[in-house]
Amino acid sequence: MKRILLCLDGDAQPSVFDSVVAIDAGVDHLLRHAGVAPADVRELVHGAMFTRGGEALRSTAVFIGGSDMHQGEQLLAAVQQAFFGPVRVSVMLDCNGANTTAAAAVITARRHIPLGPETTAVVLGATGPVGQRVVRMLAQEGTEVRVASRRMSRAEGVCHRVSRAVSGARVTPHACEDTRCEGLIEGAQLVISAGAAGAELFSQTARESCASLRVAIDLNAVPPSGIGGIAPQDKAVEHNGTICYGALGVGGLKMKLHKTAIQRLFQANDHVFDADTIYALGKSIELEPK
Ligand SMILES: NC(=O)c1ccc[n+]([C@@H]2O[C@H](COP(=O)([O-])OP(=O)(O)OC[C@H]3O[C@@H](n4cnc5c(N)ncnc54)[C@H](OP(=O)(O)O)[C@@H]3O)[C@@H](O)[C@H]2O)c1
Image (cartoon, protein in one colour):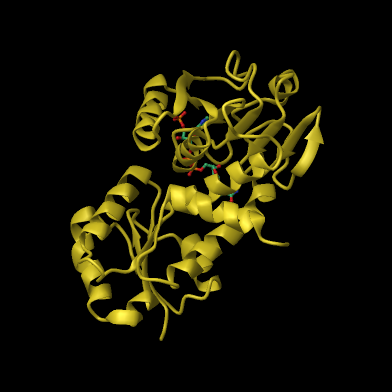
């Protein structure tokens, strides 16, 4: 039976990136819907669900994209409300690649340092879809996380949402307006920069003067780098005693995880892939023999 992926995107245009990855992961047909609001979801999901029953339900799945994580979460809730018990299809939420990218970054970091309570991490640009998920996954590991934004109220909002999702999360909000990140990075062992494409958030000088820093990961692939002196293709490159990764250095694992998650959607009709499940899937992929 043909694999059909119903793509629900809150943005005006459905993501081309997500569509290409889905096709490369073996999806036969994409039903792409843009500008989707929660009120639209029920009818769209029923159209996908009631046309195929029993075992065939696993050949249909739903993918939720778009650039707004809050809206994506609302769409996910609406999709799940449209199911009737076992009459359901698998669904994946990955707004702006947030879950797959964040999981790839956090899994990359844990290759080099433990992520338990002994580690302090700073997440720059933590208010975007990717940064929010990075904070959540680190908090889930018990890491102490400093959540940075240019605006304190936005950092507080992320801490509030992550604390609701992760019990015992150790997250603190920080306002940071310049690339020196003074007082923010000191004593931290890990920094992950998830700022907007083409914006430097942490200068090379500031990075090199932070003696505690062991791992630095920059997710921005568009020049200038989000962290000064880290090139997009850097992969476990040591600069001044800090192990550094650029966006492309993390991108291989992100792409593998994204494709694997899409393929797994079609193995059952009841998977729900969001932050926790995608992070767990990423960790299991990491353990597979190379
Ligand atoms: N490597 C990969 O595989 C991969 C995959 C997906 C995405 N990405 C990259 O990951 C990064 C995060 O993605 P995203 O969609 O979460 O980003 P985003 O929403 O565009 O931006 C994240 C945050 O950056 C801050 N920001 C925006 N403009 C800024 C500026 N001029 N200077 C300083 N900070 C600024 C904002 O936070 P405040 O307003 O709160 O300060 C914003 O919430 C992007 O660079 C994206 O290209 C990489």
